[in-house]
Image (cartoon, rainbow over all chains, first blue to last red; front, top):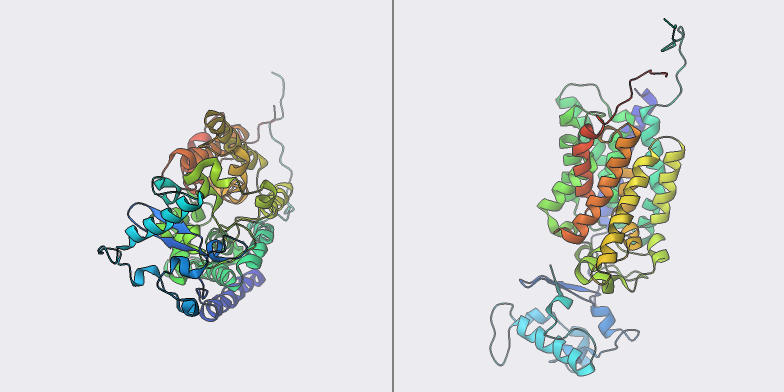
Length: 129
Length: 319
């Protein structure tokens, strides 16, 4: 068995760690950075992990915000919103295509143009399940 | 008839060797600390929160079940704390608090106390809890999704998932030494291969775990992965990646070696470990789950009573 001292240690561990754990959860809630680092799109064809930082960073591909967030002028880049704000996941038309169509056109088109990254025909290079 | 001395037992008083369950549990916690500390370094205070909550609630669940079932208080032996620590180590740093508390409840109450407490559990409580959580809340164990907001100094892609989805091409950017040094994302305490390895060797040298299980588990992983890799090197990653990613090392040293759910004889131990390694790679390469370690350990836990029936040596036999 164990000694009384060891029992006291277990009580102390439980209480102290419970307090520290609660403080950590309360004081350090998960916060998304202002500019997303990576985005995970969970769709029927399989989830897609998009490395946002590598696309916009100077050390990565150095793409300008406006190249993807196409409605923004240069002084509005700080206000860039999520694509789903305009491109509805379920509905769309010629003028404002639905999210999947917009993504395939935007991502695949750019990849094809620069001869780098998966194209629209290579589904499983982006979509995984 | 030739007189043969079969068993010699000396008179009382006896001297206790000093080896106790409490000592074993706290030494195992100590051995796991290097890996935990690197997790704290990379994931910061949220990881501290997950680990602390996991250990604390594991102890509290055990205390509650002791009180409810009107049995002696057993938290002093450190086993609940160890289960809490190992469970927390397998989680992503952003695990919600309710999931940690649910997980420790499953580990302590369903995984251990229902069977009768320490030494009676048929399955490793930590593996059982993670398996139930993984099936119930699959997304919580998707490390790519859970760690989206971490900007670390290395590739923030879960290597074993990349290997499953993209084959050898998916892990091409990972350097083996970096993986061994913990420069990969994953569970809080599962990525630092060197730390876990050193902790495991310490436990082996102190006699707390058996080398037969750990070594045969790693050998099982390596050989099976090697055969797969030989068969299709583009689709299946090289065996070294299997050893250094996912839950492999923590599984080999800290999960598969759990005392009451693993065999006690040498040959059964070797078969037990090797079967775990083989199952791990089979699940990874051909199954639906990204990592097979947890499910493989549950499978070998299931077969361990049968394995122990293989040529058991009579207790006290001299010749």
